[in-house]
Length: 503
Image (cartoon, rainbow, N blue to C red; front, top):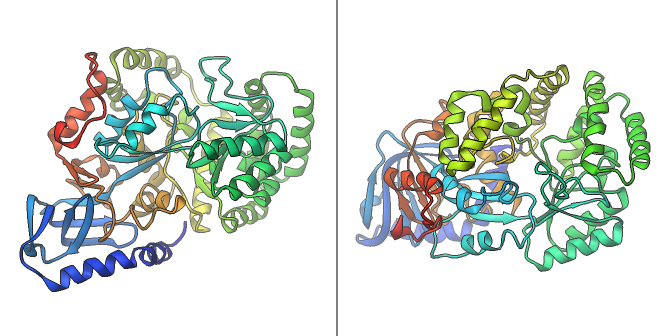
């Protein structure tokens, strides 16, 4: 993972003007400066500054204007005694789908995300017409919602995996059969104001290279599942923003990676015209176990370094990637979160997930889990950049709550608590070039904060000990958060997104 020192330098350079301005205010110590909120004598924790005890955080007009001592210089309309408590920046879920499951859209995601301190959502595949209302509400400064970053539909090959043919393959994609159509798709999405684009596994090499080139020209980063038609070396050479789920990396690390690539190329040629989801599944079933059983440590180290040097980040989505082995859906404490969903959906999840409870993981599932754990440790040691994302609601993952499971799993897979927090705060901000605005507790940053009762550096699970949040300067105490948690369950048409004063 990138060093905290480097992250601090990158962010501080971009907020230097704001810091200089705010420092002048603090140094003057003018008694009676108006503020909206002061959190007094709290322990502030972020990936740039580490752990700072006994600080005062002053908020005005949705921004942090002072951090440190000297809160007596300010007159605030609201004051919180933070003695014995902890503040972290607002969290990201950098891999969600607001249009994957009918009934689990922004009206469910937004209140549950905020109730769990998740203030930024990155939707990694969905048609923009279906996201229209979600985008409008997220962009309405009068409403308290998470920020929403969208890719628009997945850009897949001529045959699409998510084509709407089955309930588990909803229509989340568009086709790009060749280089020209891939460029056109990027142009269309750029014109509609997407924040990044998502490339998928059935793209041809020419289409993928053209997509990346066009996205770079349009100033858009590319999140991806590496195309099965390409070797990982070819994908790295073409470039991208971040890889989801560590997908297909095991294939590139195999001793016979070149032979596996040749076999995939031939199988893809023979499978033209067949359903893409079935073809993809067959290829993974045929090659994943073989590849994991024959990993080349030297080759893999070279690939990890090459991905890092090419600026490729990793979004492991451990909550969904460990579906077969972690078996979150079988744990009573997790099943309790289904009660947060609309009644019909929560009941449906409770029943459908029971079908998997009796299924034990296969040998390949177990081997893949072991490989994944080792891979994350190796990437950590190589200073790979990670993003925290879950893939909610896929895999019976409750929005909001699932991000805290992701943090837990990231730590169990070898990251330190501060590194896991980094992946869910400043790292996504840097990915989108927003590190001067969010992701740390510094003057000039947005006032997006989470007040915790317990120390997350002692136990990452303490990120769930939320006492209150501050979102764009709006203070939501425990009662307000409980109100948010209850919104999706209601049947009376109550608005999911509201103004601060109405929560």
